[in-house]
Each structure stands twice: as structure tokens, then as C-alpha cells.
Image (cartoon, rainbow, N blue to C red; front, side, top):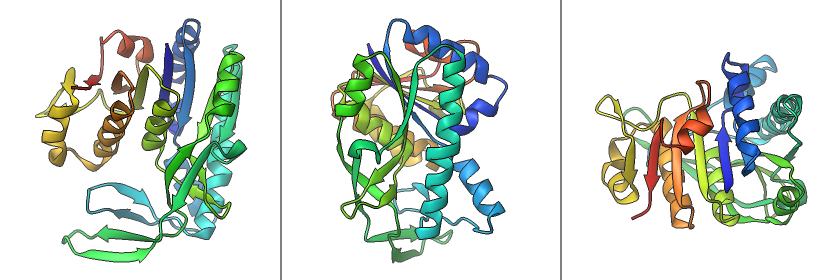
Amino acid sequence: MLLVIKMGGSILKEGASHDLVADLKEVAQTNKIVLVHGGGIEVTEIASKLGKEQKFIISPEGFRSRYTDKETIEIYTMVMAGKINKQIVLALQKQGLSAVGISGLDASTLKGDRKTKLISVDEHGRKKVMDGGYTGRITQVNSELLNLLLEKSYVPIVTPIALSQDNEPLNVDGDRTAAIIAGALKADRLILLTDVPGLILKGECVPKITSTEVKEIAHGIGSGMSTKVHAALEALNQGVKEVLITAGTGNTPISSALNHKVGTVITGE
């Protein structure tokens, strides 16, 4: 199978990181894997140390995102494509996996449109229109480089930065990036690793749910999980067979999710 896995950049700092990477090695023996990573918390920490306080906004749909001006996109690119991406590459190399770190800028792997404006909603529900900055929406995946790496048994580690029409870097959402890559590569599974057991409804983790059922309850899902749920729907719409949302902790988080022992399985109709 071909698997696209989204993992948070901070997960390698946690005690379970060794188990996760060891499980990745095990899964990679019988599957092809593309990893997409996050790392927003570390971007915020380093930006703060550099004297650039970060601003976050909530969209009318409930998505929380970083407001990315020119200085922020430079810091974001430095931390994500430099520091975090290479930390993950090194962690996989230590386990004997041939990992290659790239960003969406490399070989124009991810192309996107720069948003001209953003609409944010404050705590009182009031809307505000602001300049789009260096935030974007992926419009195209150039899968040639990814397929070449996969054919040669490498594990691509992708930083979610897209190339704009004006050849500028764009901050794009990691979960949605993973979903779009999964669709473009015709992946069998999309796995979204998070810090909770799965999709939580009424205090309990939902073991399995269809895309139709998800759409019916989407309005009641919190902002953090909402992005993952919408990414799941996007992947399913592009032909991915199923999406797994699960915690990145435990002895075998990926293997257990693939065997439907943990997490939430989201399927099509």
C-alpha cells in the first residue's frame, strides 16, 4: 500500500517518539510512505525569541491559522524546512530508513494561490477583513519528484510550504497538504497523527464513521479537529480509500491504526 502520514513536528520531542519511528520502520518494510510534518509550536517559540510575536486568526468556518506576513514566512520557512524537517530526517536515518527531506518549493512539488484577503472572526462573532499575507491554498501537486523517490524506496518528508504564482513561499495547512498529496498520489490510506485518541464525540472516541455522518456533525467539532476532518473529506473525495485519525503515541501507533485497533476510521459513502 501507499500511505501518506501527517505528523506534528513536536512529536519527536515526546517520550514516545522512538516507538513511533520504530513503528514507521516496521510499516515501511511492506508499504511505501510519504510523511508530511507540522511544527507550528516550534515556529511560534523561535519567532518569539527573534522578537516576532505571532498572531492567530479564526475563520468563519472555525479554522485556526497563523497570520503570515513577510517576516513570518521567512521564519516559518527557516524553522519548518530547515530545523524540523532535518530533525525528522535524522530520526528516520537512525532507524535505517532512507529519508529525503523536501519542501513544496523543491521541483515545484506544491503550487498554490496566494490568498488576497482573509476574514477573521473575533470572540464576539464580529468579522474582520485583512490582507492575505503569505498564506495560500494548494492548487497543484507535481508528483513527479515524490513518485521518483518512492520508486527508489526513499521516504519523502514533506514540509507544507507551497510555491506561489510569483515564486514566493506560502504557508499552507499541513493536514490539507497531506490530504491533497494523498489524492494526487492515489494513496490507499491517509493517516493523521494527533495528540488525542481520535475523533471525540460526547466524550468518547468514535471508532468508525462515514463521510456523510461526518458532514452532519461537522459544525460541532472543535477547531483543532475540524481541520483534520475537512482534510479527511478532501482525501476521500479524491479517491483515498480511508482516512485514519489517531494519536501518535503508544508502542505501535501506525500499525495499530492500520489494523483498526485504535483511532477513528473515516470511510466514503
